[in-house]
Length: 147
Length: 357
Image 1 (cartoon, helix red, strand yellow):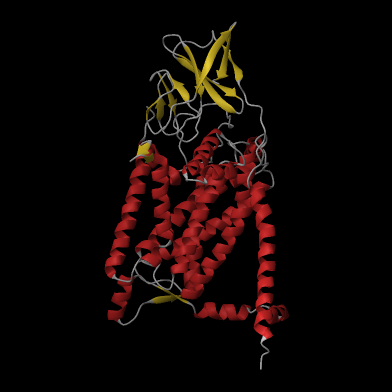
Image 2 (image 1 turned 30 degrees about the vertical axis):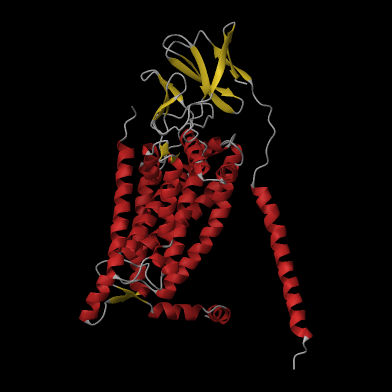
């Protein structure tokens, strides 16, 4: 005959065993999961960069320049006005370029198009490009993130 | 002879040989499709071998990756051949795996009791595509850089976890050297480990259940009083080896006469070049994404496309559990499979024809 205390003792042992197993699994899974997610690397936000000579940027052309870790595009419209935008396509992250024949900013990856104000006007991009302020100091184009 | 006895006492080799001697393979008008699984396996083995050779010289960092591949193809004796074979075999492996998948689908080989064989096979196909995607970035050239940016950014459209998933895949917010190291790790350690285990399971299941006989052949065989078969040893094995030799010949010719190009080194601050497109097996998805409008019925278009593709993949994985045993259900599978194949072909054709405006 099994003493009445036996099932209770077995239950406690099983519970302890489960706790032990769960603890082992958690002590492996938690650090591994945390390890897989890359840490945030603090980066001084780029507010303003020089984008090369204003004179060498002819009307109806564009130039891609680094803006911190990401690319920016500065264009001179056919009317001669300078404008700058984030050069990352809002569709799937490709880097855009200026197309003189279309007079538009164009993404080669999925054929997205933006007008001279950075508005998404054709193809799959869902949002306009972020625009930057443009100033010319001497001959240097300076583009600045809007506050 | 004494060595043989010594080994046999410790490993049941004789039992295995005896089983293989009695093993027979059905022989009918569709038997040719049986060879694609073996071909895919053969190409996988080539990838393991050439991949190990490339590892001897490859350096997985943004500063050195491109230069190390350049060194392999220009300075290392036969380096050009090893790299070209690795790249071409990857493409042939995807093609062979797709041919295997569709033949299994159209010949209804996923039926009971082979559900797990189908599921493990489909997971292997997804792993093959993952191998392709992770390996693509490793030479760190312009095309692979932008393909990886697009490919990883697609994950961002997944609700809730999308952003985290992109960071996980990229090792940060952007495609950088951290992405290269991460995808390299997946490509040479994580994926091969998982794939090898799944291949072992898949082969075990194929051995356990034998080759599937298509229902139409089964019906005809029942009328004729049995199905023809050939011995696995040596008949089927020799045919398999012949197919592998043919694949090797095709591979060597492609690698020699159409060597895989390296392209220009990736520059994160250059625009994506005109005419950029992914590998042929991702072209249908690439073309589909081009035609999806920014929003569909108020929902992000990308999300709709990704959800639909996800549903198709999930449906394909669970296919044997969803399809009944009736001939009508089987006919529906054939139509759905043919429809999807047609869709993939049309989209691929459109992508290939697309002329840069």
